[in-house]
Length: 498
Image (tube, rainbow, N blue to C red):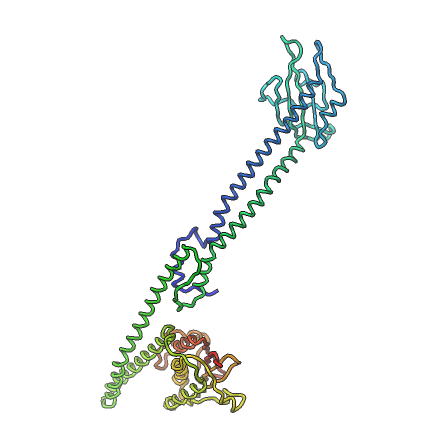
């Protein structure tokens, strides 16, 4: 993914964040929209479960109460005793639950066993003492062999009845208990039947919320892509279609910032260009005057001082020329200049021929390597190599590369220039020299502005930066590599135009 430019990074750093650290708006909205739903889901599940469980307990207690009443009707007071009419049919009715175990007991006074199949625990001490009213409570009984008893949790319904003399009545306790196995199974079924539909509903709501947030934040993603996919020099306004009002406002603010930055950059480049133009005339006059003064000076000390002044003026004039060239190579200036289709091979030959006198003056052997440029013979050497762009800028770039080779290759060195097709889509221009070259760690930095790999010569550190700027504006590439046993190759590749 491309790295956002510095101005876009500063813009987004000023936006308010929703939580500390590197937060995600999508995650933030998901949490704060789904968290209340989760709380409501838990609350609804709990309420539904408790309501269903209460009704189930009421139905269970109602069944125990009816069974205890039926059992109480089987014990009838006669005189001073009790008549137990508990036929097999009545016993089968009480114990008729096929899914659970039912226990019963009749005691009088309460706790003194007279009828039943198991001794049940009495009601808890804090239970209300009601006559002819049921009392429900939970208890634990022991079943199974006496040496290995099994504890079973039961639900008990107990009714206290009076019998005998009305002046001194006796009390009879009728208890019916039922294990909690079926009750626990019912509880699990209620929980499952309650939670499953709510879970499906919750999952559906989460999916809808996720889709809604993703759709709602899509314009922000498009805005991010529009900004992050740009180069550092692309300050054109951001265009978003069918975006929400909030995103349009953000894009408008961003476009206002881009416009201000673009105007500032244009003003700075215009100032550099105007200043360079203003400096050319006085520097040219200074060079002329120092040249005349050098011819007339007879004092050696004065001649040395004038030589240094002339050298400084020459370097300043060269710097101004490079600054003007760099200003012409900037995106706005390059876009405004005419582009045409021209023969790069012919341009390379003409430029090399023009620079031969300068190379001879520096005692450099400069020439075009026709054999290396056309391995397939004379026909290939005569074939035009067409490219499209601004011929003056391309010429300036090639001139800077050859000029650097002449400046730094050293006296007696050889400089070879060749232009050839590289595959069906590219054209390469290579400038080779057998000079000292550039150390490998510095080969990537020499294309930076005002960087010099050596203190020798009178360069200003802008030549290769201009080359890179011009080549990249023409969708090409420039690279540097060392030659063996010594030397340097600068290679420029441009798209071929049929």
